[in-house]
Structures are given as C-alpha cells and as structure tokens.
Length: 313
Image 1 (cartoon, one colour):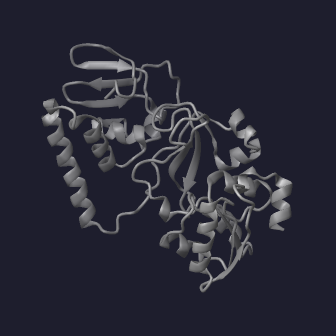
Image 2 (cartoon, one colour):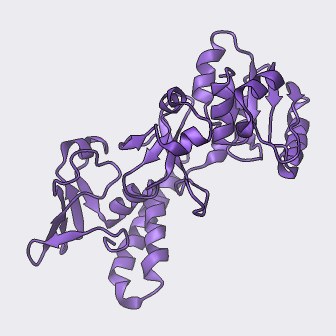
Image 3 (cartoon, one colour):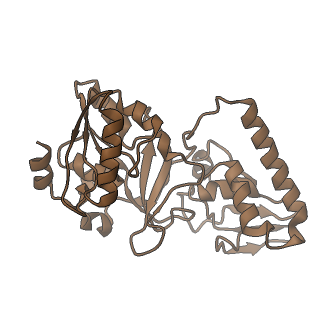
C-alpha cells in the first residue's frame, strides 16, 4: 500500500517502519519522521499533534483507515478500492481479503440498521498547504481576495487531490463535506471528487447564499460549474449557486425552491441549452424562473466582470 502511494519509508527493525508522514492532514514540518508502521499488526500512526488534531485526535489506524484518509472517502469505499486495486489480481491476499470483506459487511449492516445515516458527512479535517496565489487562478481571472474567500488554491500535499487546485464544498451549515480537485494541466480527469460524495444532494455556495437571503436576497442565480459560480460572485452577484453539472436532482430542486425567484445562467453549448430547457420546465410551475442564454460554446466563467454585469443587470 505504501508503494502504491510512492511513500518512501525506512525499516527500523523486522516489524517497524518509519518516515515522513504522507497524509493530506499533515501540515507540520515535512522533514520530521513522525509516521510509523507496524508490519505484523498492519497498523500505522503519525505522532504529529497537528496531524492527529486534523483527524479529530485520531493518531492512526489500519490499512483501510489509511486509504480512507488518503482518498478522502468513506471506510466502505476505501475497502472497495483496496479490493479493486489488489485483491482481484492475486490470490496471495486471501487473508486480507477476508478481513476487508468482513469490515465491509459490518459497515453495510450498520448502515442498513440506521437508515437516517447522514449523507455527505462533514470532513474531520481541513486541507493545509493550499496556495491561493497560484498563477493558474490568476490566468482564469480569479482575484486573490476571491480565492481566499472561497478557500481555493493549489494543494501541495499528497493524496487524491495532490497537485490540483482544490475547491472546498460546504453543506448548508457551512461545514466542509468534500473537496473538488481541478487539474492545472491536461491531466484527466479534469475534476476529481472523492468516492462516496453525492454532489446531487448539494448546491455549491448555498451556505453563503442562505446567509445573504436573511438580508432580503430573494433571487438566486444558478450556474453549472465551480468557476462559473466563483466568477459571478466576484463580479458582484454573490447570490449564486452551482449545480456542479448540467442536471438538477430532486434534492437540488428542493433547495432552489427556498427562493421566490430563480435565474438560470447555464453554459451556451448544446448540453447547457438542453439542461436549461429541462430545468426550466421542472421549476416553472413551482417558482418564478428567468432564463439567460449565452452564445454557443460560451460559459459564465469565460466572461469578464463587465460582461457579467451587463448581462445580469
């Protein structure tokens, strides 16, 4: 597993390894070798206080816990990843496979017994080493004040979001429930989201909008993507949310119906046009809907602040 993540770690004795902590929750001095592994027990720990604090005080765990933190996913999804990565390739891991499948079964049974289990639980950590001044953001026309406001920046740590621009996603209460990772080059996929995260249950930036709604804002602008939302907000229209795609789920529809008026401002490509028609037809009998159409292939984040002001006002 350590080799899978490219972790360089030295052998202390026949049972123990020690080295630099690879976890995305580790923010202290990277040169300190605080990360230890016990081979016989298949457990790990990081002795860094700040690293443990980012994980609600948990210093370590087993292999599934390790993958869960590295991939920013649930225990069940971590177990499934391990199964996909290793256990179907060789019969040598049958003992480990049994342990993982047993833990999967326990997780599944617990979930079935508790049908009210929270979807998109708040993360027990906040990513450190996030640079809001990276040139990629400036090239996209996002000002530093905006990147700091949204918590956006290049993540220089390890794990699923390594070397990507990370975008925190919050629930309605303002708690971070996931990070989206945008590649800054031609790497595919362009965006990464953690396994198990259900974007159809959330509207990006809704927590900020709800705070403004209390001050009398009754019309919400709806866009497709993260950067569409960020650029519209930056242009002076803070009551804006993103679908994180071009479809509207039932959960997202219910969230939008909190507003007396909805302004659809989706991309101008064919997918955006079709989505506009579909979403407008869903909402038009339930709330006031206005549609703004962009020229072919144009999208809100490609427009200047002056263009956005002219269109939205």
